[in-house]
Length: 247
Ligand code: IPE
Ligand code: IPE
Ligand code: MG
Image (tube, rainbow, N blue to C red):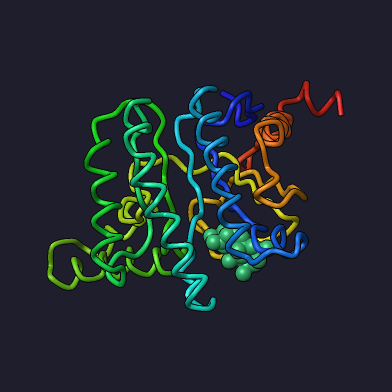
């Protein structure tokens, strides 16, 4: 057995869709124009990912810290998500896509929550790509909720403290049952995770591209995936001797 994996195609791709505001500003337009244009990139990436056989695509749509933005922008972002679900759900369903939503739900209004639940329910038996929408998502919040739920079970005597393991925490994250992302792509030139999938990203390959999200098209996406396939993933192990000799 070898711990060296040269990844041909990723099973799970996660994307931090960033740079909408700057894209719009550079055109003298309001930020909301950038968010609207970003929806075009989202459509193209979802279609391409499905076409090339990616099993899981996670998109960071709204972070738990994005509440710090002006209310008008928050309303716009929520409006775009609602439009996306209303307009595209039938098409996603027809293409056998399964939708999952990760993030905190308790502080969402019932209209948006209802739409998110409808998307999950309608597509839950689909067997094609899983589209994971990270909405009102923050990794620290997610990990905190997972640990708190384990501690509650320990305190209630349902579990021994020794049951708090790596796997037990993973199983209580919003991403339970979803493999960790093989690669996380962030657009717009920023090189940070911004509280995205911190637990799951332990061994993810990170790819930062300069394009703003509204400029990120199919070719950019395929180029990022090709960059991923040239990476060597070792997971703490060693390169096989042949590979070391050649380097
Ligand atoms: C990404 O673009 C969209 C969200 C964060 C919801 P931004 O809105 O962050 O755009 P910039 O980074 O300010 O350019
Ligand atoms: C991360 O982008 C969140 C989403 C893409 C939804 P931000 O634009 O919020 O991140 P920071 O503030 O630049 O780190
Ligand atoms: Mg940003």
